[in-house]
Length: 222
Image (cartoon, rainbow, N blue to C red; front, side, top):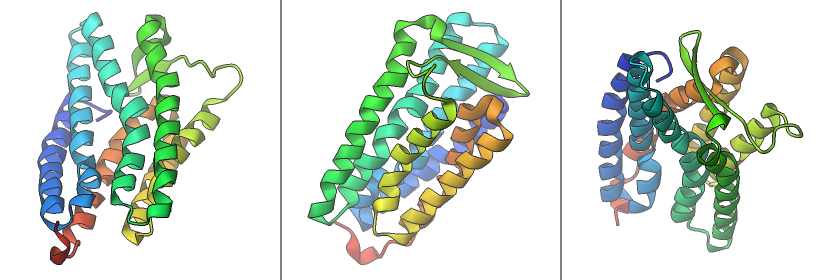
């Protein structure tokens, strides 16, 4: 979480077991939902990495601070740009609709590579500071100078949420709407540490996935 190591590890302790529960429940009721059900689990891992990042910051472990930031951003700039589309590809039953999810996954992978890989190549493109009690992951991007961060966030939002919106499942569309609202609220109130704060709220909202899985008909297990 974006506010302290204790809060991050608390979120991890909550999300990982609930994510495992959701994954197991999905496996027994409808295995196509397993990728969706793992979302709280992976958010829990991400929050745990940020908890370690707080410890590294407090102990002034410079090398570990950068390594932890890259681990956290692997999820923020990488995993979450590809995972939703692949998960919905598996869940989608309409054969004619499946290619659109693979297309979004490919776009997400390319966009992810363009914003994440340079952080490994150019160390000075990533700076980590604590701002108003939150971790601010300050990054340079190849798009700087001709695309604003607001436009980049819109692209990010479309890649992450469009697969969920394209599904013909109302509860999944509600989940997408909640995530979108969290992103907009974070951009308005916590723009100074956008990535960290948004990932926290998205992690909390991922608990809605458990509600989705818990309400799957027992007869649909495969």
